[in-house]
Image (tube, rainbow over all chains, first blue to last red; front, side, top):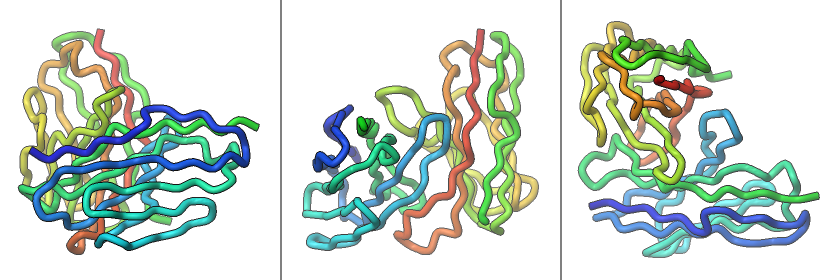
Length: 111
Length: 114
């Protein structure tokens, strides 16, 4: 059974305090790993796709990396506007049209 | 700007009522999805559709049905609402080239069943 586990569930940082979010997965034949950002009361918004171990993607203060068993979302010198829930997802083993999502990490950046 | 619009942001219904949630996308996407999102459980796929009049069950289809009569519109139907269907419902669409992973989501419909 496909599983996506994110940790920690919640993270509070001071502005400028860098940290990392973790996404570990068990799926047969990884066909990509995807990161989304979700603001309160809104739908998720796509951030990154990673396809192979060793790959990295960057966007502003965010950098996503991928190994064979997990992905990290590194947040460098975060600002309060980075506060959101970050979700990761992988295509399901049974159907590439379906994504299996983790339950997310709720990030709060305090000014 | 790409857009997925869900017809109702907030709904309050009584147990046993029939509920319609509508979703419209303006991107000419073939694929559309309905998820529900609950604290601690993440997003769970209810149904998806890869073409007009085509539908496939997701992980939690029980108690739900869907309709896709036009490419741009995908409706979720709760035939007889129950309190355990209180949740945030999210519609998404994509053109889905293999492994792109980029779903476009609506803003969600928060349903409360009393």
